Image (cartoon, rainbow, N blue to C red; front, side):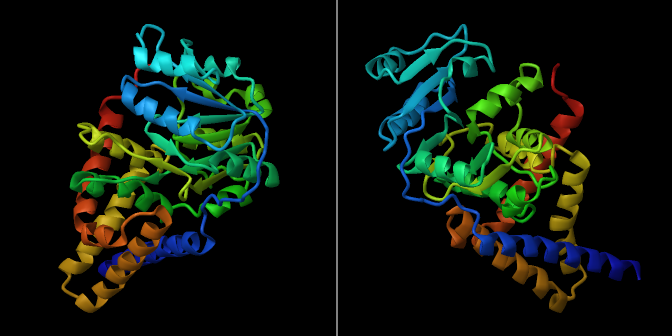
Length: 346
């Protein structure tokens, strides 16, 4: 009886995850290209990293945007010496400015009607800013959070990078984030956050973490707790993210991103691993192959739908699913152990 109950729990969990994936696939939570044009001033805020080449690539895509009413403020480390190439780039275009302020102070220099926070490992395309403004105006949003489409190259990257979207899109119905005011329905990424500037200046969400840069998920929750509207969408073909080809800490960073999807709750993350990995393995070990057809079918269809939503190669995700699940366990367990035994310094 206990074994049968356990199998039912596993299958119910798989069906629920599949239902969320179907909802996301049918509701198609992508940022659309609306074809509207605006002239509102937008302040683009970027925190610089030591990798100047990556930063310059982002700045060049911003410079080539079809939207001219922008100011770009690059927040640099107070003690870091900037490369001559970056300094010359900013000097050549007065819309680009280098700022050596402490975290959170750079917003004081911004004068736009909207704030767009971008991660350095992103590339934006024509139509992004106009589409962000249109969506924000139509639905009266305080925060519009965009999950960039991942640009993936290399076998190792394909084993790790699709995991975040795989977990996110079968756990959170993205369309419900805007439709329901409850903070329970929240998801986000720090790579692209678009704020109404007036409201942001009043609440200063990035400063509430005592100098630390808060996670997007926590900011989405904070915005909704103040009874404002927030929305999280997939970037479609308007914004892309990527990682450096040889990033040694990719497993660690992937695990951290995955853990954020569970609100940094280690117990919930472990329970998820137990059900999503241990469940199908338990059914397979029971040698009831007729029963195993259901989870295999649900996983197969889920990978196809999530791949299309994320702009990824469905064939590779299906073929590499066992390998990706192995890295899911490794990266998430590593993040949980680090969080338990090496807590953040205050």
